[in-house]
Each structure stands twice: as C-alpha cells, then as structure tokens.
Length: 158
Image (cartoon, rainbow, N blue to C red):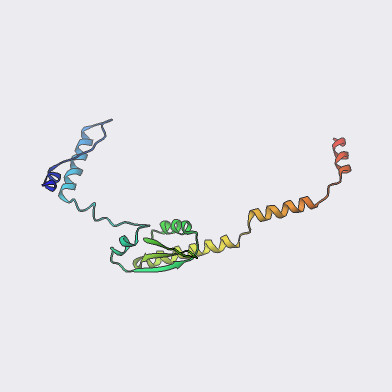
C-alpha cells in the first residue's frame, strides 16, 4: 500500500527565485525522464575511496597490498588524482597496518599511483628536517663569541 502511494506521488523541487517557463519545462522533462527509467540513478557505481563491500560488489576482481606506513592521506590523495577505485582496511594491533584493495581493471593507473607514492615517500625520507637544521644553526651562533668592543666601534662610526 505504501509503495503504491510513493509510486503515484510526484515530487518536483524548483528554485522559486527566478522562475521562468524554460525552468518549468526543463524540470518537467527531467521528471518524465526519471519516471521512464528510475534505475539509472541507482545503478551508478561509486568511484574513488569506497568500502570493501562496494568494491567487491563490482565483480571485477580485487587485488590487495599491505602498507605499514601511517601516511594514508598522501596515498588517498594520489589515488584520487589517478582515478583509482580503492578500499582501505585497517588492521589493529601493536604495529598498525593497512590493507588497500583495488580493482584489477585499473592496473596501469594503479602502477602509476604506486610509483608516485613511493617516489614521494623516498623524497620525504631523504629530506633533512628543518627543525634539526635550525637547532644546529642556533648552536653554531651560540658557540660563536661576539667581541663587544668591535660592536661599540661600529655603532659609533655611524
């Protein structure tokens, strides 16, 4: 009974600030198109980061890779850039690790994303810490003794 009422009910939402005849025509055509084929909106497959169930439901074969690094945000950013569909599963324990599941269809995009991710991780590890260099420079300045007489002469000569 409830389902019949929902199917017969027509709902249409249109912004009323600048309502024109063209807007009404477009809204009605979209409504009629949706009534002809309502499953189009439901059959859209998700892309990018998703759950393991959503990825498995696509029936395209999944591959998984174990990542022990804690910087998953960097990987997610790169995977979105390459349009890779993936799911992340965190395994709790003493040493937390992540399993990243991918669709096997995106093999080229997957390899490109992993190459860029590994390059980024290597580059980040090879960079020296700015804080360490600042502390070493502070230690050098503190160790250097400044002659107060030289400074007084310089101030007077101006």
